[in-house]
Length: 434
Image: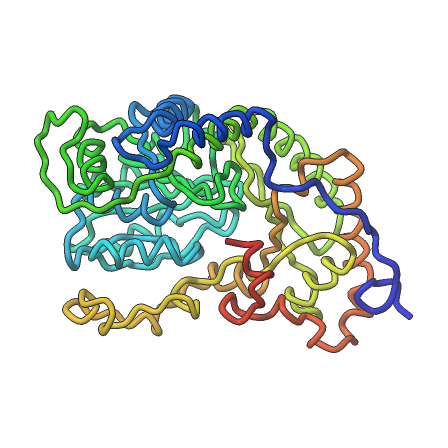
């Protein structure tokens, strides 16, 4: 019998990792205050806790303005509209991201144009973006992914050359800094999610940050049913809807903001320790350091599975690692154009009828390699424990690598749910991702 747990051996770890989400005693006090106030919604805008949280969050990231919204996807849709995206306009997005990055473009009336990623950061590749620009391109939507930032200097120069807006998808980088600038404050607008798995969470929710007052006023009107903004210097009148955040969510987020610096430091220390350990194991590769990062934000720890010969598929490797007691995923993301959650057709997206795009012909090789052959994602709460927790992660990776010969003889069906698409996975498994 093999020593691998997936083949009947004993797992490296049986204890649970630290629980997520985290909360503070003061959260209950704020929630009780909201409850007793009988003012639970987000109107008038900004409501007490939404206004306080938005101001503090924007300041942390070096932006002048912040606006709380219902969720991260709404944040993207609203910023695209504020940036002037119109019917049929093209927006460049990385192929390797959550489907919502691209569907937000569709909901705003635009056409997502998929580009490949950098093999060392898994973020939008600059040269791929450059090649994708056409006369109809209006914006670039870089995603700062997992534990790395997109190459913002090059993207800013490219956007300036072609008169394009930059909207940062910052769902993974709460509190992060790139070359001294806070996430979301580098481009024209930045969008964050507070979904339950994120580094800060209220269960759901989102925020937009910007230093552009015209964009900020447009956003306020959009998310507040079209009402005039609080300052109304630009007197914009837009077709709005109710995308406001509730006071209960904002009250929770105050505590999340207070915990973020200490938890971020803890993740950064653990990630550095894990990278050093994994660097000694043949067949796996930590993502190379990114010198531009001046404050780390690690939504998931990602490393690359690169054994010689590839006798064992990545999905089976991931299943074996999880059997050793290490929560992990391989198909955390797929290239959006191949995702069965990306139901973009001319019938439900009229812009694709007037401006046809055949997404079945799109190919982004680095994104596909990351999604189906190479990437291994560890949830961030694995990094919130002690040094021995990190050591056990590395021990489990090393154990599976040492026993790849046994794993190569195993039934590939043991990969099970790890080889399924997101739409096929059981609900409890999908919920851990997004």
